[in-house]
Structure formats: structure tokens, C-alpha cells
Image 1: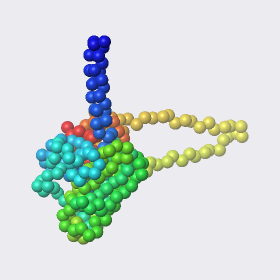
Image 2 (image 1 turned 90 degrees about the horizontal axis):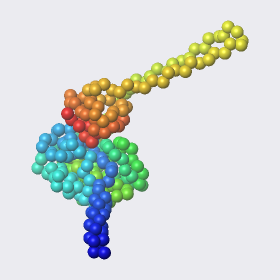
Image 3 (image 1 turned 180 degrees about the vertical axis):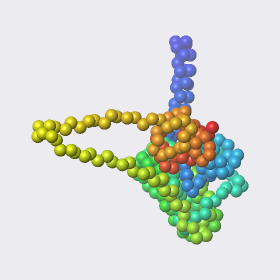
Image 4 (image 1 turned 45 degrees about the horizontal axis):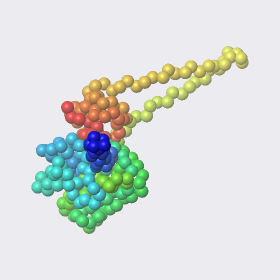
Length: 267
């Protein structure tokens, strides 16, 4: 009996430790504000230097709901809460459109925007799964000059949220940050079948089935493009830099390598 207990106690302790690791793991969803660029986006783009690990994972500023900090109180992302860094501010007018890039989607309760302790906007998703990109137009009426907006993505089925600080220069006649327009793609021509009269009434035209073709993978090192299926290890070039795919995905507009460091690694 004594030996049995000595074996049982370590197993119970191990199970408790494993359980704490499971429940303590963060949500699978990740995302950040790509434009106007949040502080983590500026770090990922290399526009602010010496940012530490956040430059490689701008989508990972996750913490308990209800915080009012740029770094979700995470010590490894403390640079995001350092106002002495003189973060570049985007010039906007009396309203602005915030564009989110979600590298992993998750059921969402609400999106909130704060200036100081004042919530200036809230959008409810009612627990639905969002699209890969999300946009909100927010009024900045009553505010002017340099302001920092805290953008919060509240997850529906966990206790966590994602945090972004966006520095703005409000006023000066601007109309807000426009949503980038996708590059137009020329439509593919549609083949029109031409029917020729048959020689005899008994002749029946049998259509020939076109062979099925598979689009070849993009050549290594080619320029990044939307609508392309990239596989782990593929390399592309974007804005003069070379990137390697970190996880397989089909690219969409606003998932350019410079904005989605979770998908692309600079090499």
C-alpha cells in the first residue's frame, strides 16, 4: 500500500500541472490593427527600431479583458507602452477607419476603442466568427491634436482580449485613413462555343471535355501576390525584401508579408 501511494501522488501532481498548462494557454486567435499602423505594426514594418520580439509577432498582444495598456501588461512587449519612443502618428481628420488583420479568427464578442479612459466606439459581433480582415469607422469628434487610441478585440469564448495602441494626429483637414483598395485584376476571357450545322440530320455533335489542369506553384522568390496558395518554405519578395512562408495559406489583400509576420519570416 505504501508503494502504491508513492506512485500515485507523483501522477496526480503531474496531472494537476498539465491541467494548469492547458487552461493557462492563450486563445488560438490572433490579430492586430494594420492601418492606421498600430505600434506593433510599426515595429513589424521596421519603421520603429529595437522593438524586441514584438516585431516578429505583432498579432500576439493578448491579455485578460478589461486592461488599458498597450502591451496587455506583458513584460516582453513593454516597448509598446513606452511613450518616450516618440511613436509616429498618422494624420487623420474627424473620423478614421481602423483595419484589423486576423491571422487566426475566433468567435468575437465586441470591438472597443478608447482614448484615455473614455470609450469612443464599440462594435458587437454577438459571438460570431469574424472575417480575416475587419474594418470599423470611428468618429473622433471632440478630439484634436496628438492622441493615442487603444483598440481592443474581445474574444467571445475566452477571458482574453487583444490590445493595440494607435497613435493619431487629429485635425489638419484630413478625412481619416482611407481603406486601401485592392489591386484590380483583369477578368479572364470566357470562351464562346460556336455551333456548326451538321451534314446530316442523324449526326450528333459530341463535346470534347477539356483536360483538367492544376496551376503550378509560384516560382521561388517571385513577387508576393494576392490569391496565391503558398506553402511552408515558399519564398517571395515584397517591397524589396525577401520573405519565407511560415505556414501554408492562400493570400488575400492586406495579408502582405510586411503586415503578417505570423505568416512570413524575413530572410
